[in-house]
Length: 151
Image (cartoon, rainbow, N blue to C red; front, side, top):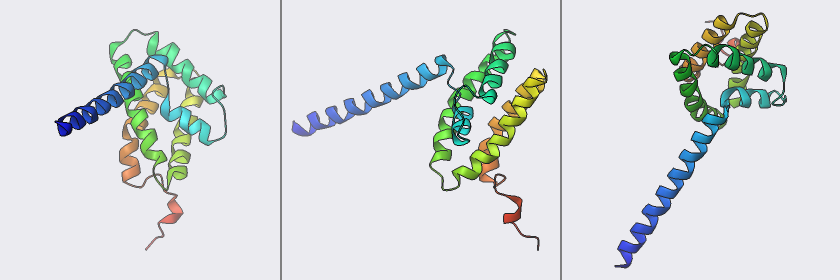
């Protein structure tokens, strides 16, 4: 009987933890939490009101939300989920600063495209690079080129 009670208690605690995590994720999605861009901007020592974050929000508001295109909204939802997982994974790695430096390059490129009014290009770049980020990391593309001497 005590084993059953312990099992039920353990199961209930796990379920509560899972529900709290899910509620946190959902609230961040609907509040527009940009995990990857927020993490890289914080890594660079900038704050949430930096020009890059302002331009990324402009991209979200003026291109993704305003167009009413379902595929873009679906991509944004995907980004929030992928970004949450990826940012935690990157933070757990010993080479996280190299990765954030790599990500910073395309965040800056995206912001530059938004600033020049090229929203479709900015959206495509950010979407492609974010979706490929995990594979780029696994292939070592974030490593400085000098780390691999010519043979």
